[in-house]
Length: 482
Image (tube, rainbow, N blue to C red; front, side):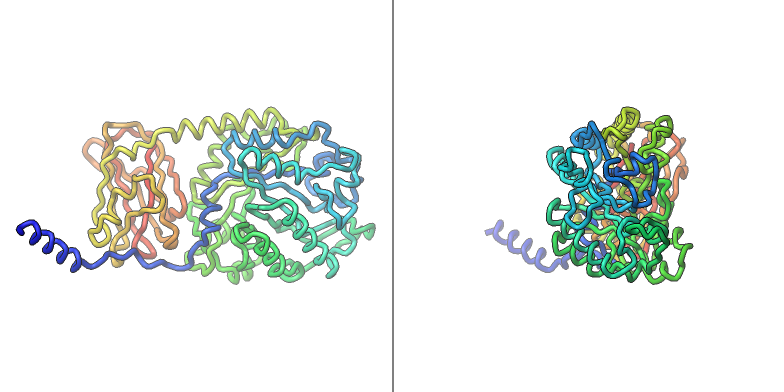
């Protein structure tokens, strides 16, 4: 009878406790497609076309298809190299500005089908898609809107042609994880022999709303990397081709503001906009060589593993996926020097982030939401991205303390927000305990999907992270220490 009474009293107590609800989301919010895309973190760009053989960056559009002749073409080599380097996918220049198509398009003669390569039966897009599938890589496509070969470019007929090619690629080579639209549009070109300059309004001419609908009708999970001035774009350019995001990186932007900024919008693209009304995270595109296409003169200018690691910290380490260009040579192979650099880079990443010292640390916070274990300090180190520490609504700051098992030499602090509720943190700092005193070793503004802070090597037993300002109560999902 006594046990029954205690059970009854416990049930009464439990029923009277108010459920602690998650924080309200702060707009704008990411889609699941965008979250999954950011989670890939690294994928490769592959620039390959007639330019590889003419030694140019931008083809004029009058190239003889026979010039395209990669005699040792081996997309399996590409895919294996990329997989071993840690990439999650590859995006191929199926058609660059020269208009030459790396698949046997039925809508143009300017393609591999009219090349002597593989007796006109070659298909770079199809063979790379197959190699990616076999090596566990996702496959994406770059399709240049500008076409310096097509006679009707600048007229309505070309837009119909472009949409036909979109459909053709998506029908025959899907699923596509990302489709990439370039910002270079209009200028001089061959244009079917006219050899003239043609200008277009890149916001209106291509009928982007129709193009985006074609993509999403084929696969709603394909991410569209487009012009940030278009609110339908799901990812934006980072504002440079040097490989870095700003120290401040908001995932939000305001397309109208960027439109009004004109050519000065690169800074806005790099930092995002705390007041932006569209969730459009940045992507960092940069090449392993000075150029985007292979040039023999650049064989000694391949970025070193240390340089690539710095790019990783300034892109992925600032919350933006890294799209690193790896370009095949004229034989159709990724060059050995590029492979060696990629391998050294992967080794450095693996060694640097091999042992997370936070996993076995004792973690404490100065407060947590509703004193509920659903939002307590343990969620910061449980290796579950679906759980998170959060504070009460009115609390926009917080202190997280981690005590390690023993004094350890530290070099990197990794922090992640729970972005399903929106991006929140506006400023924070990191301290370590030295000789009984807390010393600041790093500070930052945004955190976002992932923030990796490199600190001067220090031996310590305790680390403290202070969230000093947020748009709303902070919600952090992960902390790692290396």
